[in-house]
Structures are given as C-alpha cells and as structure tokens.
Image (tube, rainbow, N blue to C red; front, side, top):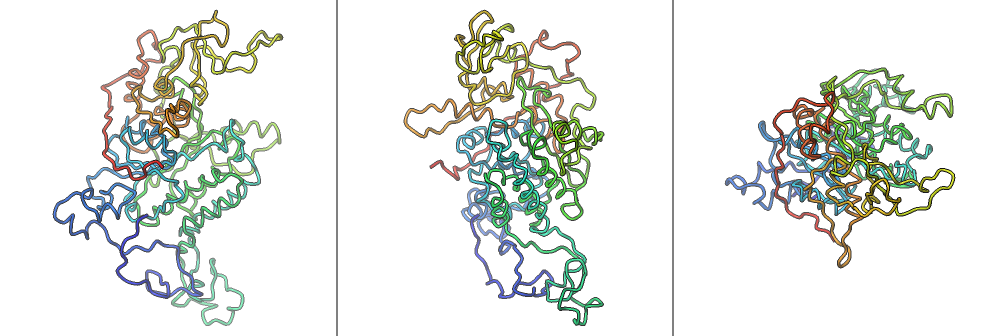
Length: 551
C-alpha cells in the first residue's frame, strides 16, 4: 500500500487505547496510520472528485480513488473479491445485484485484463503483497474468495491432499483469531507486567505479586491485541506446505479478520473452491468454519459448507465446486437445516469404506443453502442445444486414438455425446472436434470457439476474453481456453450471491439462461419450465486506470 504522512513520531513505548504501556517491549501488530482521509483533503473540499485529486488517488491506491472518501448511507456497498479471475462470480452477482461497488484482486494478467474489459475494477497483484489493513478498506461490507485449486484438483499433483501438511496448516489457521486480535481471555494483565496469564492463572515466579490473589488496576478480561502481521501469518502458513498455493487458503481468514479489526462493517463471506477441499481435505474447511463461528473467533451466526454443481443451476456443462456461505448476524437467504450426520456419511463415504470411520476433522454439514426452495429446477441444457448442433453428434476432446479391441471403443476416453449436459470444461477443449455419430472418432471437422467455450460454462457470448501475448504473433488459444475453464460459473455466482445480497436469483437467472442458450419451447419440458419475468441485466462499465500494467 502507499504510505501516508505521519503527523507525529510514534512513541517509544507501545500503549493500548487506554494509554497503558505494554510490558517486555510488546508491540501490537497494527498498521501505522495517522487518520488522514478524504475529509481532510483541501482539494476535494473544493468539490473535485477523488479521481481528480492526486492526494486521494495516492492514498487509496491500488483501490479506486473514491474509496478514499468515507462511505455514507446511500452509497453503493463496497465489496472485495479475492482471486477474482476473469469475473465469473461478478458476472453472476450482477444478475441479482448490479449496484455494488466491488474490487477484484487477481494475479494472472490475462484474467485481470478480461475482468477489467468486462467493466470491473481490478487490482492486478499477488494477493500476498497486499495489506488487508489498508485504511480505505474500513468500509468493506462483503468478501468473496475463490482461492487457486491446483493443489486440490484431480488433474494436479494433489499436494493439498497430503494429510500431514493439511494437519499442520489447519493448526496454524486455528490461530488466526489470536493472531489478528479476536481471542478473548480471562485476564490481560500479563501484557502489562501483571501476575496473571491468559486464563487468570498466576504465572510462575509471580506468586508474590500483590495482585496474585486478587485484581489490580491492570487486571481484567478482554481481547488480546493483534500479535502477527498478515505477512508474518502468510509466511508461517507457507512454511508447512510443499506448494505455497495451498497456503493461500489462509487468505480467507486473513482478509476478513483484518478487515473487521480495522472497523469494516463486514456482514458476509462467500467462498468457492474445488470440491476436493471437502472430499479430500476437509480439515481446512473445518478450520475456516470454526474460526468464523467460534466464540473464540468471529462468533458469526452462520457458516455453511456444501458441494454444488453449476449444471443443476442452468449451465450446459458440469462444474462441481465446494461453496461456503457465512453471515454475521442474520441467516442467509435460502438457509436450510439438514441431517448433518447423513450429509457427512454421504460426503465421506469413500473414507468410511476405507477406514470404517469419518475423517477426524470435518466442517458441520448440517446447514446448507437451497436456492430453489421447492421451485422447479431450471432446465437441463445439453451441449447440442447450447451450441445449436445436432443432438446425435459427438464431441472428441482429444485427437484420433486407436480402438480397444476388447471394447470396440477408442482408447483413453475423451469423447461424449452432445445430447446431454457436458462434462466440466477444461483447457484442452480448445482443440475439440464435433462429428456425426457415423464419422470415426477424431475425424470431425467442426471446431469450437472461445465464446462458445465460455457459453458452455455460463458466460454471455460477447464476454471480452483477453490474452496478452508473450511473444510476437502469439494467439494464446490455450490460454484463453484456460480462462474459460478456471472461473466460477455465472449461474452459480448468481445463486450464491443472492443468498447474501441483492434480489432473488431465480427469475433473472432463468431469463439469462433462455437468452444465453437461445432456448425454445421444445428445449424445455413442461415440468421444468420456470415462471419468467423481465430480465434484470445491466452490464455497467466502470472506468479504471491501468494500475498494474503487464510487464
């Protein structure tokens, strides 16, 4: 972050908010900030916008200049989307709530360029280089995150499945509440040289202290002050895993906790991750849930985990992901209580079969989000319908392969019929070939475009996919295909966003599905036909400076 002028030199001895000096040189891990905001700006006092003011722009950097101005009632609520990708969650959110003031944080330059072209304010940076205690973040109300899933995915090296590493990382994430100032203890007086420890016990060697058997001016319960910076906690988390991308899961605690610590009125946290987070590494989900709902952590009222498939909410291809929804005070929209034990046995049936018992550490699955609430499901869309291809055609996602003499089928898989919802889109689909059923495998001539790949995931066909060439004349087709394979499906983005903000997702998403896939009456069975209303779609563009130009 950009520093601001400090009006006074910090005192040698750190003190608490009541002016009491800490003992033994302890200094809380708080951000030094002199309190300057746009309200102190002499330029903005003349009526100029923050974007026209160098002081406000520098102060807010890398966030929008107008975030230097304190939020007031009537302003759009501010939100942060961590690991925003090319904007899938945002595209879905805009279907149900187009009035938010959101910032996306994204490291990949192609994804950042795409999200920026789609009209979003993007901070293009490694999230670990950003300090979530930036003063302009004091008014953020909502957070969403989609941490990288490569170490959890079936297609990766599965470093995130390592039980020993996950156990170590879980233990560290359990300490987030203490690290960032949310641990409530019986007695704080040891911080000021008094005789009592965290839980009121007399410390060794302090038995003769005059307050050992009673309570002095320094004694009393309260919250421990923050003792670690975000950078320190990140380094600690990364130290126990073989692939530091797994440690990025800790950001889903670092950011919300630091935001609340600096006074942000945070009311909801949503998160998307590989389904394998719950299936193979549930201890990480448990750590996040426990820190959010525990009285020794956030103490929020709701935190649910579940697996949901975008194909069940309108997409033409499957995209099964783990979803978390957390709310501070009220139950989210579509909140539903289920049999947690039954859900756990179904979720970890593969563990039960192998070991005879459930994993040691798992999140509570007794709470879930049910966006349908008994309404008819949105129509299932086939690949043939989505791409306007004959229903009896096939797709080959790999090149021509030999025939297995025992089965009579091509070796290695990679082919599927178009008369059903498609499998999850992956980057190699850029080379897909479509063919009639009587044409040999691998000899199709009809290809697919990037807009069509995006449509299968749930993006509108004119979505502005961007590739920044790394060499002359590079087209980046595989890179663009990867962009379509990675993000949240807008269909799921709408359903989950609607659980915590905006309007009900059902009608605007049904209209979006009809328009995206050009559905006709024959494409929708009577039982699946939803009740529709006027579309609620507004693709508002936001002007933005190129804060982090590509190298």
